[in-house]
Figure 1 (cartoon, rainbow, N blue to C red):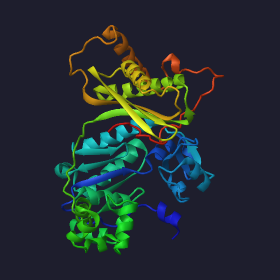
Figure 2: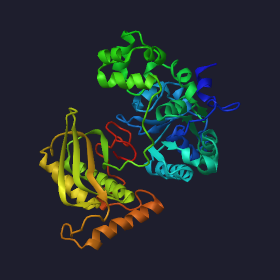
Figure 3: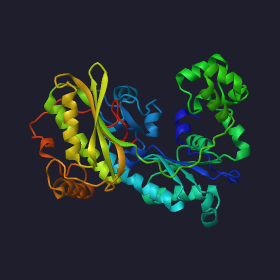
Figure 4: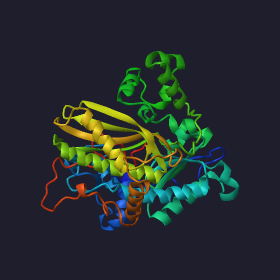
Length: 431
């Protein structure tokens, strides 16, 4: 069987499923999520190699179709290299808002199954379905139901791992991609896990893999046979204990339904380095608008505004300021970000990346509000909320500050590298 056939065959699911007794944990992962959403709008591209990412000198691959992966293309790869590997690929820009809408629909399906949903990103989550059995059936039946509903309601496919721990469930979903369902019963964990390469374990990067190879350890099974004390001596106490537990399939973590956002931000890499303060301020305005909208959508306000400035030399500095009261207003975020940029003394220094982030989040409206920047509260706040409503209906860019509207004959100095470029912090920009 060719590598391409291997990549495109459905995941393990024929025949009766394995015994799912004691397997309440599901890991659900959308298949090539960004690409799958794009194909909903571009069905003529089905079966062709498709890459989602900004097609610029500093852009990186955000997602690749399985057809593109057969050529060695993968996420986080520079677009320039992806083009060399697969010159016939169709490259589409990232459309974060479109993916977020589909993601919201998918997570609504999850939450109709169980309140115990732990989102990891836009396209994957852990579910604890122990309490849903009487209503919906066994874990494997619930996994099949989720797959059917995601396909029927959103038009995309997902893969589901079913196991007794989060670690094994995630490993299972990875092994049954694309469009698969795999149950790993408790008494089958060793048989499933031990043949896999050590690089499959969380926490094993290139350096750790090399260290394990020097010890003659190339599979999880070989690693599992090494005494804990030996691993701790060779790898350090924490990492040794971590890998020893995973090699035996032990993972005590529970599904945590919600982890509050610690911060919300956005950043952008310029296509070419920029030293024009007006261009940089305009980018800070665009980022402040994005961060403000995300704060309001999440029901948050933040007390601390920070900027991230990366120079052409790759040296990066951050500056922050804590406000007298929390805010979700783009205008306040922008003014503060500009003051931080000017105070950094880099107004004539070439920059390759700028970022804006709001931290110390609190629920919106929790803190007493004072008037900001000598403006009536109903002014800027209502204006920005009105923009939110227009954007929700007509899409991003329907209304924007005049400073962000360019004349048809005006160039784009620096040309941002786009989401997914160097230093990008993900589509939702949250931590």
